[in-house]
Length: 154
Image (cartoon, rainbow, N blue to C red; front, side, top):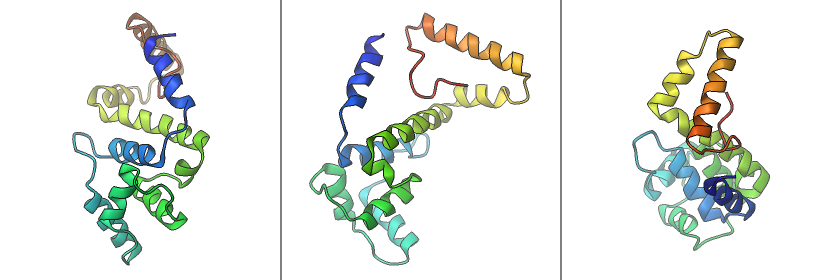
């Protein structure tokens, strides 16, 4: 096991706080090359989607910084919907890990090279896709990367 995968195992075995999960979601779901949304942007988007004032920018800030740790289910659902995930992300560690694995793949696809490889592999035969998979596995080994990191399957 590499040092990076040891660190990842250590990090994923410890439950994350609501603030950590929310900040992670807002960071990885931001469009490529853009900063995470501000508290005001999050609150405004949620309130527009709800058609009423549901949440304030101050409350979003309190959740992001851990000053508030017990939001209502309505707030969790609104935040989850804003980020495009299930509210279970905030409530269930197994579910948040599964979603994080999917988000890791999305984050990798934001990189133009990774997206280009994925798009160019469309239409290849099964044997060609397997050869590509083998090459990627070999390159990961050469660079000291683990095979069990999220988003490594093709």
